[in-house]
Every structure is written in structure tokens, then in C-alpha cells.
Length: 244
Image (cartoon, rainbow, N blue to C red):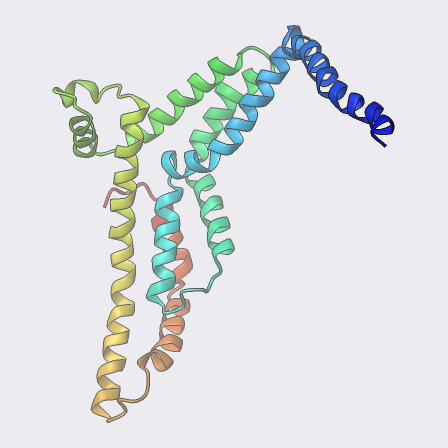
């Protein structure tokens, strides 16, 4: 029995060595010349695909829009309607509409030259970063940028506001977007809160304290929102560049 198993044991010992030799011969071929450049390009593309959702949250108005839409949903008393997928898609399309000029500039200055092989990947990323910095800098408050620079240990924050680094500009821009989202959300929340208070007061005065106010206030809030064309009003506010 041992003699019969000896060839099988020798084969198992030889396979790892053969695999290591084959891999050692294949790696120089894959990483050399055009194959190496193609492998690096694929790795960069995969890394960008992973980073795109985070960049979408930090460097665009998507965060402000999705927060306002979520607050509207809670203000109306329907935390699951519209569904999350609908809100995300709506926020994405509104982001494309709001940043149309910026995306057109990215296509003109980055995408077209990159596809025409006039720019390499590093140059394209650098130029795209400059375009996004211009967009964020135009919509970032000076006090937010100064606060981020001060927290990072900069002794003279005002001197760097003309051309701040992306690592400082991105959180300052995001803080401003969060502030603006909560300001718009408060304005959206207030009329629905008044409806809830009025309905609750009427039910208490009628002695109907066991009736949940949301049963009556929800259809009234939906009716008011639809009658004033609330979706269109909200979209106009979200797409405007007002600083509130």
C-alpha cells in the first residue's frame, strides 16, 4: 500500500514547485512592457471604482440633496416612502443637473484628452482634482475653511484659502453642505410640524386622546404637499445656488 501511494506523494510535492516556477516566469511577462502598463491601468480603474461613492459624497452636492429628501420623508410621517432606492436615484439625477457645468468641464478638459491619449492617468487625475477644487471652493464658506485649517495645525489659515489643499477643502465643503442641508430641512419640517400640533390639539379638545394624530395628519400633509406642488418647489430650492 505504501509503495502504491509513493508516486501520488511525489506528484503532490512536485506540483507546488512547478506552480512557483510558472508564476515566477509569468510575472515578468505580465508586468513588463505594454502588459505592465495595462495591469497598472486596470488597478487604477478598479481603485477609482471603489473610491467613486466616497468622492460622490464628499465632493458634490449629493449629500445635501439626499439629507433634505430624507428629512422631508420623516417630516411627512412616512419614513419608508419613497423607498431609499428612489431617493438615491433622484438625488443622483439632481446632482447631475446641479453640477452640469462642472461635469461638462470635466468631460472637456479631462475625459476627451484622456481618451485621445493626450493625457496620462496621473495628469487626468490632477486636472480633475483642480476642476473639483474650483467647484468646492466657490461654494465653501471662508469660516469653515479657516476652521479646518486651524484644526489641522495651520498657523495662518487665511493665507491658504486662495489655493487650499484638497484634504482641507473637502471637509470644509462637506461641513457647509451639512449646514445648508439642515437649514433647508428645518424650513421643510416646520409646516408639517404645525399640522401635527394642530391636529393633536383638535383631537385633545374633542376628547379623542386615544386616536393617534398621525392617522389624520398624514393624509392632510400629503394633500397640502401635493396641492402646492411641493416636489417642484423643493427641487427648485435644491438646484439653486443660494447660500441661505
